[in-house]
Structure formats: structure tokens, C-alpha cells
Length: 454
Image 1 (cartoon, rainbow, N blue to C red):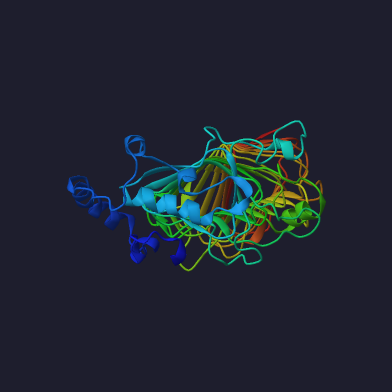
Image 2 (cartoon, helix red, strand yellow):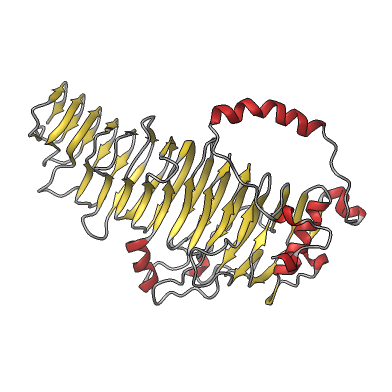
């Protein structure tokens, strides 16, 4: 990376700023003073001159720094020169006009710099299966990536830092395969520092999409594509992150060996430690796990998930651990079809936190709607349940506490099963197709009442 640096760029400017483990409260306490200091401080004089037009528009064109966009020459050095030129000029936008830009190495976007392509609205290349539509590189700005081939733990292709962003382009891995297990690559995008942002992007076929961990207040919006192994990872977040309008569909390949591998191994959204993550209008199709919540070395997730969906996943929602403050999942829509024992929701025995589903629909031919274990509390309110196996209960709780209120069970077959180790259960105000079929093996406190049966 050092060889790509402009001579006037100091080494420390190339390194991501480390984050200390601070609580939201301490961060907010420091925010006002730090913000005022930043506003009052004069920007440093630029050590690198740029032309008047670029200064007026805060825009630097990568072609002025040697980029070709022909899909054949390595563009890494040209892009990095342009990014550091913008940084030395006090920040601003680096523009990559329509073209096919090849990268054998990685990029680092400095503080206060945006790398933007030509797309004003995120593309979805249905042309990978609909031949009349444009292919990657036929229009717009496309980054062709070979960096990191074979090493999923390698350095991310693009690293975002404090107040830097990426927008308006497609990232495509031309050497990725469809007729075998996918080739491993590092994360396409890593978000570090404070306020990193990724907008209006198509991640067409990366092995791993966005690593949104170890930062503060990340903003991910209007992303589509088909990450094959992992879509978005959120972890070590101590100040609120935002993910909006992210849809992962099999636009690149919906059949063959690579897609079969994805349905057996792929995880679309992975959440470790996050202090109030806000997720709005997210969707995934064809993964082993749609939304995974796990305990990591930094903790677990609590957050607000509104209008999320998962289709054709083995586990639409998998909770290994949630925070005691709760996962609030509202207006969701979930289906599970393929693989071993397809299940809409599984809360594992490791969980001791709180999970709440509200006004959500669970449908499609699965084995069961939910399998619940652990010592936490799981609740379903105003939800609809359709199409589970006739020889199994829709909701099976082996332990923990359970709330089922105001839900609609649309089939006349086993509805709820309470195991011996269930501590508490409240089942009230529901509608059952046929008589309520509730199996109760626990001797603990269970309240059942005010339910309507056909």
C-alpha cells in the first residue's frame, strides 16, 4: 500500500483509526465539545494543488490520475492517488465515470472522502438471467475485483474510515465461478472509524459483502446483490448503526453448484454486539440463515428491525444469543423451505435474552414455525402462521418463557407444544383453525385464555 501513496501523504493518514470500547453514554457526553472544536478549527492548507474546477465542485476525476476504465489495466494506483489528492485538498468527492475498472490490490478511502460512481440509483442486474438487460460493465461504473482471491480473512477490498463513503457503483468479481463452490475472497467493504457510509451499491457476486463492525454510527443504505457466504456483519458497535433498504437476491446465479452451496452455507445478515442497531426494509433470498444473532467477544445485539424479510432460507431467523434489552422484529415476513428441518425461527439453548416478533407473517411449507430453547423470553404478538407440518406443532418451546398473544393459526393441526422445562407461558387472545391444540408438559405457570376456536 505504501507504494500507492502520494509522496506528501503521511504514513499515519493511511492507517485506520482504532476505536476504543466506549459506551454510547460516554460517546454522547464527548460529542458536543468535540463537534464544536471541529467546527471552529480551520482546515489544514492543502499541500497538493488541484485545478479550479475541481476545487469549486469538490470533485476529483480518477481519469485525471491515470485511470483508464478499460477492464484490462490495474487501476489501484490511479484510484488511490485520486483518493489521497482529495484528502489532501480537505476532503470531497472522487468521481469514477462509467467504465470497467480492474483491481488487483485494495483501496483505502481516507477521512472525509467519497468515492462515487455514475449510478444515481442502485442497479439490480437482472440481466445476469434476463438476457435483454445490461450486463455488468455495459453501463455505469463497475469495479472488477481480483484482490484477495482465495483468502477470506485477507485485507478488505475497500476500507472506509471516519466520514468517508462509497456510492453509485457495482462491485463484481469476474473470476468467481458458478459451477462449483465459490472462490473465497475477503470482505468487499469494511467500515471503520466514525460515520462511515455505503449508499446505492450493487454487490453483485462477492464472497463477503460488508463488514460493518468496529465503527460508530455506520450508515448502509440502498444495497442490492448476491453475497455468497456472508452479506453484512455487524459487531463491536457501541453507538447506533443504521441499515436500510438492503436486498440480497440471486441476481447473479440462482441455480447450479454455487447457488446450492449458498443455500447450505450462506448467511445474509449477521449481528454480534450492537447497541441499538436500526434495520429497515431488508430482505434476503436463498441463504442457509437469513438473520443470525450471535454472542461474540464484545457482546450481543439489541435493536429495532422493521419490515425485514427472508425467503427460501433454511433458518429465516437464528438466535444464538440476544441482549436482555431485546430484539424487536416488527412487520416481518419469513419463509423457510430447503435443507435439513426447515424452520422459520430457531432460538437456541444458548440464548438468555429477549426476542419479540410483532405483526409478522410466517408462511410457506416448513417443518415448524419456531423452535425455542434457552432461558430467555420469546414473544409473538399479532402474527400469522401458515403451512407447517401436520405432525408437528407450529411453535415448539422446550424451555424459557413464552408469550403468544393475538396471533392467527391458520391450520387445524398441532399449534403449540410446551416442554417440561418451560418456566412461564402466556397464550391469550389468539385465533385457532379448529380447536386449540396445545400440548403442555410443564408444571410451571401457564396462562391460557380468551382464545377463539372454530
